[in-house]
Length: 407
Image 1 (cartoon, rainbow, N blue to C red):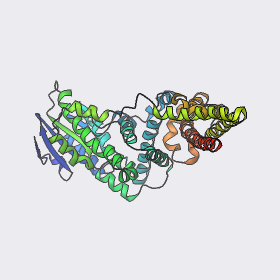
Image 2: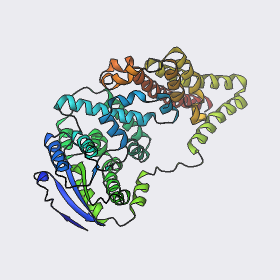
Image 3: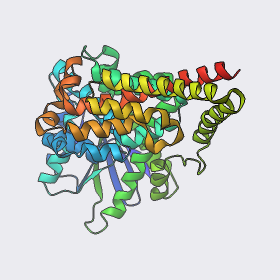
Image 4: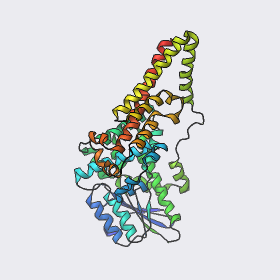
């Protein structure tokens, strides 16, 4: 294994390195995601004809978002909600909104050099490998490493990113010039949380190095020996180091970094919460009779149901969605599958099915507060989050009232 400076004239003046390993020479081209010079460097490098494969710091959904703007219209929103991918959809939407703000502010499409690398590689008949980990998976792994308040803050930050309309700060733009879209997007959390930084930046260096090593296996039949890897400049040093030094099998490293922490087979939190709620009702009926027990039950239903319904109403939910939120909120703590946010959002999406125009206007509409209530896709997301928030506050309030009544 060796690392050297590139000799390709197209790369002169651009951050770069060469790593040779297992009979493959990897030319790592570090780019800035908001730089026309990076676009030119990518174009010249591929046009040079020196490479027989191209690797790009993208995942499939991000490439699709860059190259097929209409693909969003084919999304099955109900399936997204039912499969528990609502938060992941919101994360991708937040990233798209951030990129839109940058494009308007800087008059250049963020990630244009990555898009160009994929498209020109395909036009020249070269194998194109998407080596970055999917954004949704990165978000899930980051969220899993945070506590309750950390996840709440991360979720609130996503919502704030979707609603923000002001210019992107100079510090974030500098991070983009150094080359990483996700770090700039989640800069506040990455700087405050070592766990988020590790997941968003350091883990992806290891992941992309493993994917590059897998190219040798993926392309064994087409004889790829010269690979151009177009990555953000912020990943260049870490990526080169892992590509040189990692000795574990590439597939083993990749699978480790794609795995999510296993949840306990026994849902202890749900069991404890359900035991507290049901036990409180039982204790109230046993100690205070039907009057105390009925009062506890009524307080619980009103605290959770009303606040869940208020959250849905604030989101502009259909009257039937509000009713579903009210009915589901009191039993949400007893079974995760009956979560009020999911049920009310499903009801909203069924009653007010988003149209093609809603999906097409989504990225523009989420740039304004009014657009969130006007766009049916965005309103379903609001329904999910605000109903869930209202129910959570209701559970906390109802629990405190139960304790106060019993003790």
